[in-house]
Amino acid sequence: MILPKVRDPRLITIRRGGTLTDPDHHLLALWAATCAEHVLGLFEAERPDDPRPREAIEHARAWVRGEVPMMQARAAGGHAMGAARDLKGAARHAACAAGQAGAVAHVAAHELGAAAYAIKAVRAAAPKGEDEAAGRLECRWQRDRLPDAIRDLVLDDQRLRNDICWSVFDC
Image (cartoon, rainbow, N blue to C red; front, side, top):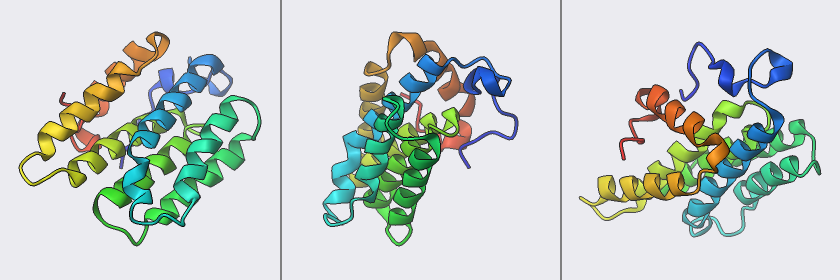
């Protein structure tokens, strides 16, 4: 479970009663896609012929550009989650990161899911005893790529949801 029971209005679009602007929603989707793409190789190394996670990331970006509707980006995210279903470890987490990135078009709060699963993927791929350090490094890499316009929002969201996101944002 990565979504809280009570949703943060800062992560709900204005047209749905929240305070999130479309430009910031787009930035969240692009950042989530960047986080997921950073670990995509961990999935593709295990399943090189399965395009679903890559397509979810591409659909997230296409949604931002106005090339696909929200429902198509969300569906691509669901297909990426399906690619993860029978996997374990880093490959599974990387596919889930892509699935979460695709879902940001539908629910902006999935941005944190993409980041959290990417960190879990890196931790799972790290040599024994180096997983925590690898996760902290990935977390810092992600934060370095946060656009200024959404930096405070995402960092606060990480603080608020860290416990339900496997405490991966302690970096």
